[in-house]
Amino acid sequence: GDSVTQMEGPVTLSEEAFLTINCTYTATGYPSLFWYVQYPGEGLQLLLKATKADDKGSNKGFEATYRKETTSFHLEKGSVQVSDSAVYFCALSFGGATNKLIFGTGTLLAVQP
Amino acid sequence: KAGVTQTPRYLIKTRGQQVTLSCSPISGHRSVSWYQQTPGQGLQFLFEYFSETQRNKGNFPGRFSGRQFSNSRSEMNVSTLELGDSALYLCASSLVGRGQDEAFFGQGTRLTVV
Image (cartoon, rainbow over all chains, first blue to last red; front, side, top):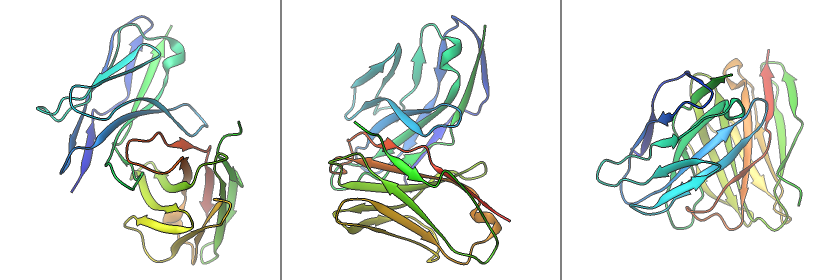
C-alpha cells in the first residue's frame, strides 16, 4: 500500500547548522507531497508542498524537491534556528476528490543555541 | 479569519464510556478530515467528510464514527472506549478537499481513557 518513510529522530543540531530530513514514499500513481510541522502543544501547519515531479517547494528557508526517480522529498534548510525546533512530518496525498493524507512517523528536530 | 476550532481540548473518560468530539472548520471550508495521533502509531487517517457525506474512511473499527452538518461542522464519536483509544485527535479542514490542497489543522482534542 501507499506509505511514507522518514528518517528516525531525534535530530539534534547547533544553531546555524545545515539540516536534512530524509523522506521517501511508496505510491501508485503521482501523489502530491507535503511537509507539515508541529510545534509543542499545537496542531500541524503546512510548511511546503509540491504537486508534481521536479517541483520545488520552499518556505521560511526550508526547501524540498519532488524526485520521482528516487521517490523522495527530502527537507533541507541551510541554517537552522532555535525556533525551528519542532516535529516535522512528511506526507502524501492523491489528486482528485480526496484530501486524505498519509503521514510518515515524524522527525523531532532539536536546535541548540 | 478564525482557524479550525476543536472542542474540548482535553477529555478524561472511563473505559466503556462513549465520547463525542467537535470540530468547526475554517469559514467556507467544506471538507473535514479526522486523524488519530499516538506515539506508537503516529498520525493515522480516520475519515473525511465533504458536504455532509463521508468520502473516505480509514482502517478503524466501527466504534469510531463521524458526521458532518450542513454548516460543515463535524463531530466524531467513539463508543465503548478502550485504553488504546487514548490519543490526540486532530481535525483538518480544506476548501474543497482536493488532494493537492493545504489542510488546516486544529490544535486537537487530547483524550485520555482510564
